[in-house]
Length: 317
Image 1 (tube, rainbow, N blue to C red):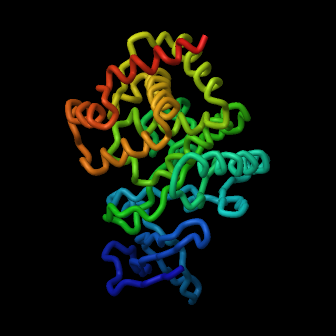
Image 2 (cartoon, rainbow, N blue to C red; image 1 turned 120 degrees about the vertical axis):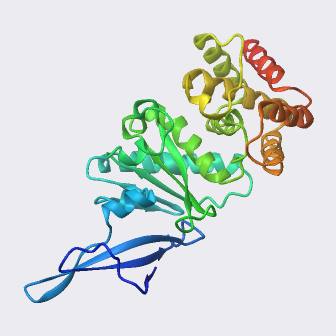
Image 3 (cartoon, rainbow, N blue to C red; image 1 turned 90 degrees about the vertical axis):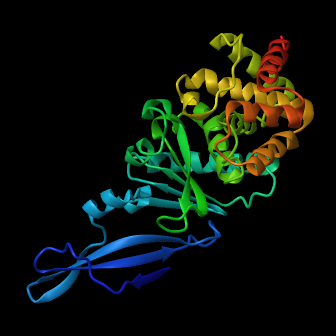
């Protein structure tokens, strides 16, 4: 941890106060490999002849800069550690900590077995205050089980120091939901920036696939067929961008079936190679460009892939 006080005091300090901008740099040793620098604003005030630190942030300044705190920055937390797992709970969620930590350990093993070249280090939040979740999810909070999000090395940088995730306690405290939710979010953590340029159906579908790899191939196939039948997915369309979240149940399941089909019939490496192809191509691709990459890499266009995948799932019986 390093604190560096910058040269000039802030200009908007109130009378009797001194405000100093500070670069606060910290690394979660053993859980993250890179340091993160936050820009803080220390406010000092003299009271009864003594000078004391009364605040380390300024709400107006944070609003201007768009600073979005980690949950541990804004409230009291209960810290649990297990190997390379660091998890933060609060007073309301702490009673579930043992169960969540147990499933985090199991989920970590699932993801390590499926996603290549992951360190296994992770930082997770199970916090009852929904503010951090609400500001990071593209869906409604009640639709969101969890969100993985990048942490940048410093303000204004697009260089990622770490990927952390936060869960919805209303979802994760149900043991059945937790079985699939935790490995899904851990897959995003493990992939890091590898899937940043991928279409949404590939990044989310791959995470859904990994979350089910604890089951046999035939069980995965039957689960996919049941979900397609239950949701009425007969004319599947893999969706990209924010449109993916307009009908999340159908979008996630369509993506899951497509990625499971690819992984089972062609091998898991197909998913990671496809992501790497999108990374090489870069972000902001048109639908036609996405389709061209899929066609080049797997010999099918996106629509045919989805139809073949649903037919494969339906044939499970």
